[in-house]
Image (cartoon, rainbow, N blue to C red; front, top):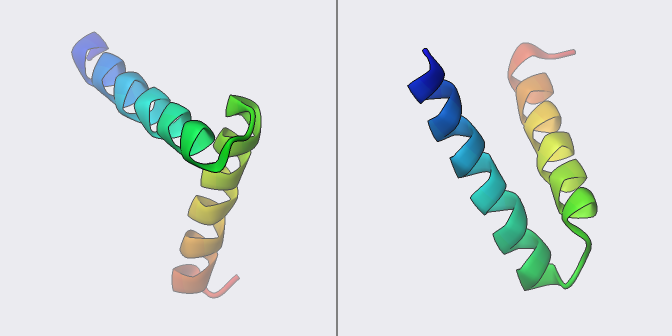
Length: 48
C-alpha cells in the first residue's frame, strides 16, 4: 500500500516540477493547472 502511494507522489511531484520549470511558474500554480485539467477531463466524461 505504501509503495503505491510513494510511486503516485513521486510521479505527480515530477509532473508538477517539470510543468513549473517549462512554463516558468511557481510549483503551486503548476499543480493547480494539473488539478483543474484533471477535473475538467473528468467532467467531460461524466457530463456534469
